[in-house]
Image: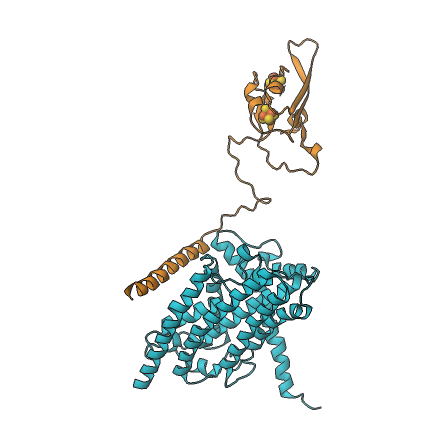
Length: 331
Length: 146
Ligand code: SF4
Ligand code: SF4
């Protein structure tokens, strides 16, 4: 008996493990969102389907799947069909490089960080194509807003990430996380010796992550009160569902990146027992905060959104970059 | 330049203040009433639809069939009948119907009644699929009432 190719095994494990993880997250983050929103407003949230409403995502999924998949008349059928996949796939691909613990990662790529950002930009393309393909001018307008928002926030995010890369000297996510091992004072968010602006850099990264994943208060892609459902106005049933899952998967990717880049990955805050559980705790703490922010702040205006990026985030991130490089040169 | 940084700091501070408020709410107990499973304690002066008052002395209603309530009702939802029975000074009520589809809960009938034979009930689960379910026979309701 010959052993199957280890590469194939790895691929199988990735597909099963990570896609399961993503599907679980996409479904249960919706539940978490509704529960958290409920409690912030002192309501209960979903409760009827299953204990604590835990089967609600299953019920929602069944409902979405039972709906007819309409394609609007005159729409570009191919683009219309392909767009949700284009939003979902890059999120799934991004998980390839994210190290969940010292030994748990689908692939230890040397250019992992670059790969994640390369995949992330496809997401916008998906939204734009979806809106364009559905032949609806409102969808196209809101897709244009999404694109300009994503372009605006990609810049400070990348600049901040470049700072982190300069500090750790690698693009390999595993090494970035490993370099922060030890207590929380080793984490990049508190690496004050590298740059006193690191906490600000983390805030910038976090803000950009919110904007990149189209979360409130930057949820221009789905400004339901102004634009019906924004870029995916025309999508019925599971087409919309896949967009939605893609959004949540993107949040998980963003939170994972924040964990790896700034919060020490799988490291314990006190240097004890590092491992997967710490990664998950940090991941879900960030996701909790993301939801918490959504239910605290109203949506910004579009000018407010762009002004924040171009007037505040970009100058500050560049200041941080220059300061870091200067300090790295000095010491 | 100073105003620029002050704006950022103030903005950040106000965002944090907002988040502090919402997280406080998050940990406070929920106030939702689980309606079909739980009910609000009824206030004594709640005005539901009208009902006949039960008279402990006579063991029946207090109505003298004077028709004042019917006349007072602006919506015309009351219709009643009475008959004079053997050995009685007053008429007694044989039929009292309230058409709740039209009632505006104004309470004029209760005020008009000279014998205080009408009162407000405390029923509020009154949604119905059929119009006829909203035509109440108040005498029957009085008999069935505990
Ligand atoms: S409450 Fe008003 S509308 Fe209703 S039956 Fe009495 S008088 Fe008529
Ligand atoms: S006003 Fe009072 S006593 Fe007169 S008919 Fe109506 S319920 Fe009876």
